[in-house]
Length: 83
Image (cartoon, rainbow, N blue to C red; front, top):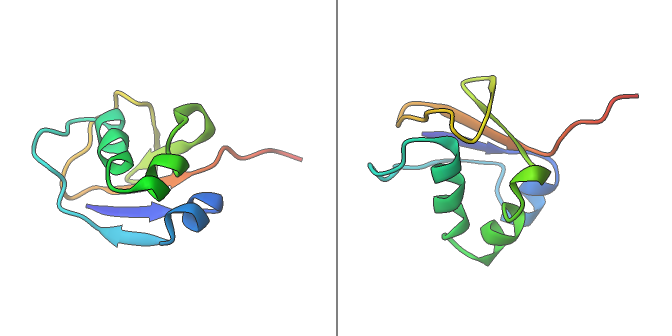
């Protein structure tokens, strides 16, 4: 799985993207976020409030219950504001 981090999430996690081997028990976006939060305190701080982030799976906006699979591309980013 390829995970991309944007804006302040990139700053807090210290990386802009990574390839990960997702544990087999993870089935949805919420499970993936919880697993990422367990990695270290930078990830825990960046991902602590699901309301403050947005997720896209394979370039489609995804809700917490959206399925994820090993070959997916997941982007995590802050909500966007219009102008």
